[in-house]
Length: 375
Image 1: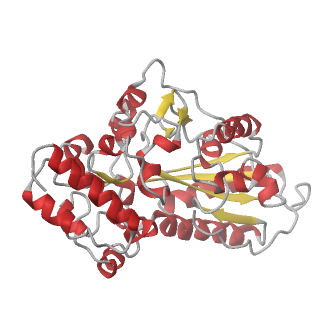
Image 2 (image 1 turned 60 degrees about the vertical axis):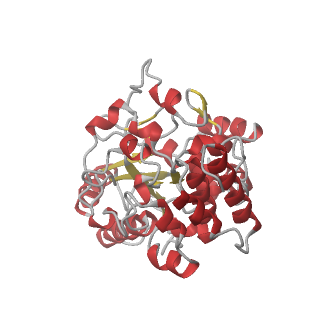
């Protein structure tokens, strides 16, 4: 997680009987949605702070240990599901959506068939979304402040204990699908979410109906069986967790199932019928950088740490660090068709200072040998 966002400029109480009568709040909400569109958000909704149902679900998920090594999911107690506990005075949450899929970058399954190529989750191809969206949300909050004067707020983009999908669902941005991602009938799921916690008692939006029906394509396509049942994801099996959140060795039983996925996994989104309605982003910051939309595995494996830091500057990928980057690519090389070129690349890292990297390289070399290429 990113560190908490900036503190609000003001936490002044709002007197709705004098300063902000109902009619003014309704107009302000319409203005906020208009300003949001001007800032590049495709959708904006308002939610209240009652997340009791989601809090109960989160507690069961944590009790079952499905968060794995993500200790931060449990560290903050109920502040994650009770916005006013996290930011005192919060009565509403402004939830926004920003589409990120680049033009022509939706051929996920075709890329997964190319074992000489690494697959990077489509959300991470461009500039770090945290920075892009946080800047826009701050501009939106400033615009509100210019219109009505100081008010209490705080901006979040995956930067604090926030149940963003639950809040977005309440705000009418979509429904939580069987893969646990938010789905929208007009936009699929290729989008980021962000929030402004505020003490403004804005009128709330109505949630939309769920439209997954009997479809279970996302459940069935998951390479590692991480979606153990509809709406239930065991993070410990999820490739996104294994390649991004986990800082230790990847369980050996899951490595062969990862294929060429070196940063995240989009299978459950790519298979979803609702994503046929998704629109390519017009946000230049989300355009692919450094050729990572279809990178050659051996070339990536040759990056030293300085090259890794330089080539991932401004990218969400940088946060996993060079060691996990090499770990992930070693697994992908182990899953590739045996070749002398793969063997040579892997052997170049046998003396890496990291025991974790060496162990994954040795596993990959054994795989190459097992399936036909002498090490």
